[in-house]
Each structure stands twice: as C-alpha cells, then as structure tokens.
Length: 453
Image (cartoon, rainbow, N blue to C red; front, side, top):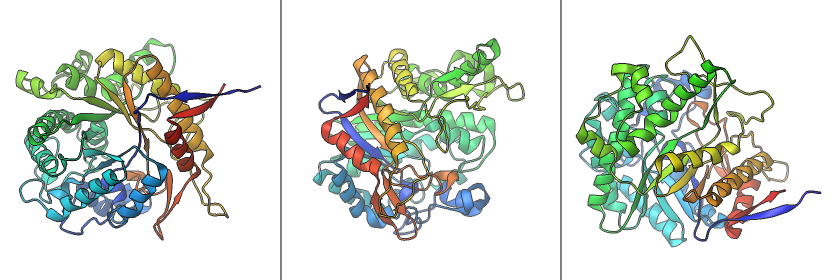
C-alpha cells in the first residue's frame, strides 16, 4: 500500500519561474530597440530554425506584461526571473541609452514588487546587440568592458529596487552553440573563437559584478547561472570513463573552475593546448570577484561514450535504454541531487539557486479548455523532491525556478517545444494556466511537495 509524505522546505524558500527576453517579449523592432544577434540569425538563416520561425512576436510579453504579472500573482510566485534585452536598453551595445527600453523594465519591476514578487534580473540571456557582434562578438576582448557598461546602466536604473542579479545565463551555450557548433546565434563554427568567447563571458561576469556593486547603494545579491549536468560513462570501460571526464571538463569545470579558482582545469589545458587562454593574475582577480550565489540550470544528466572521430570535445550524447524521455532529453531526477551536492562540495558557493528546471511535453488544450500536463507535474515533483534531499543533506539551496512561466520561442526548436506552466495560443496570444501551473501554485502555498512512498 502506497503512502504519501510531505516534504516541507525551509521558511523563506524562494519559489519562482523563469523566462528570457527574446523568448517571450516580441516587439523586436519597437520603441527604439536595436537588432540582436537572434533577430539577425532568425531572419537571415530561417533554415536553422524549426519551420523558419522567429521571436518577432513570441508570446508578445512586451505588450501583455500586465496580464502576465497578474498570472504570476494568481500562481502565488515568490520570485520571477527574467532577462533584460541588452539591445532594447543600449541599441548600439554601448553609448546612447534608449529611455523607452529602460522604462519597460522599470514598470515591470514596480508591478512585481507591488504584488510581493521578487524580481530576479538576468542581464544576459544570449541576445547580444548585433552592433557588438559586428565588432567581433564574445571572442573580442573589449566586449567585457561593453558588458560592464551595460550592467552599470541597468543597475543604475533598477538597483534601488532589485536585490537579485544574475550576470549571464548559460555561457556554455552562448560560447559553444553560438561560436563552435553554429546551431545558435550568431551561427559561427570556429572552435578557437568559441574558447575565447567562453573566457570573455566569464571575465565580463567579474567586471559586471564590480559594476553593479559600484552603482548600487543598497545590499544586493549577484551571481551567475550555469547549465550543469553530472556526466556518467556509458559503460565501465576505461575509454568511456575518460570520455566522461573530458565531457565533464568541457561542460562543467571549464566554467566553474575559472570563477571559483581563477584558472582553467589542468586536464582541459593539456587537452586543448594553446587554445585555452592564459589567465593573467589581473584576469584571475576579476574572474574570482566574490559573488553571493551560484545559479544552477538542470534538465538532465549527460552520458558519454568514447567517440574516436571527435576526441577533443566528446559531447555526443548517449541515450540509455529503458529510461523515460521528454521531447528533448532523458528524464533523470537523481541527477539534480548529484549535481547540487557535487557543486556544493567541490566549489563551496555561499548559496545556490536552482534557476531553471523543466520539461518540454506536447501539451494541448482539451475539449473543456483545460491543459492536462501530467508528465510535467511528475517531472517537477520528482526533481523538487531531489532538491529537498540535497537541502536535507546540507546543500545551501535557497530557491527553485521552473522553466518556464510561459510557453515560448525555444530557440532553434521554434515553437514546437512547450515548457510553460501557462499555455500560449500563438495565434490569439490567449493564456491558459495548465494543470502544472495549478499544481505548482499549491506547492508554493504549502512550501513543500507531496511524494509517494
């Protein structure tokens, strides 16, 4: 006979949802906004996006933000993580500020605070101003100072009310998918450029922390969000074990080690040789600028098998038999516990926020207007239970954010992947809170989750 038990979270635990500017805002060329690399990528390379779709309108959040904040209040969210569009604020990337762009985020922050929802601001979620890409993009060293200027502008306007700041979202994706694989904007395939981009993203994180702190007079919490996964070998063979170690290096340690230790991993330097930038003492000091928390995005584990045709990166995924899968990944809840404990023990961040966790499933509206997304509920419940387990075992986790609040533009996958707690009919822009949204509202109200067994 099955029994249910309730997993209560610590008082003050932050329950939220997350979105990003390009994926939901639309209004791609309105009110003085400049073009981003994603505008350019979608318009010039429609063949790289599912059905040639783009984020020109997306979920039209730029015009419907008040309705969306009302939905957040209805769900009882404690926090909302959103990103600022750099080209909406600084159309040229630097220099002249666009007042209407800043005004939009100003109104949004005020509306959230009026409803008791903590704004969690991500400065960069991949929508680089096209003007800066034209100058060299993230492989260009001077971009770190442009990013610091941007951070200073936004913090100068919002820092009197926003406590939680995230510099970058998933620099791995920006660097590797944008500059090596070329599947994401700006669509470049240049491995040395990708490694330089990764370095400059992390370096700009340090400069941005300094910029925010020097601009805000009140206490703030600043961190970075990394997409991380535990990496398991596909078999017990030595070749697969070494492949897993290399994949862990590229996916996890190449981004964690610089910001916590001021250096790249020794095995990665040996593997990639002169491609790995030399870190000067001055750069090491910037990289390790003290931060207040680490944001962790987790969706699934990685399983590595040795691939002799691609020996350096070892990023070919293996899909184990017998596992359950979403539209994109293996569903592996124990991985989030393993990851959180490893990050805490190896790097000792002061605080950890789970800044993204979610699942794409092919949601549809039933005859009665309801969206019954039972698989999403199960995924979230099982992962939240593993987060609770990590807290019980001592990990300093203070918040959990579901990706995503709304169905949105899922980059190269277009609109075919629905991650939202809220269904969006893209023809009418009608919003429908899914069963998962109602379920999550209960989790927030009760500050915990019911599990079987």
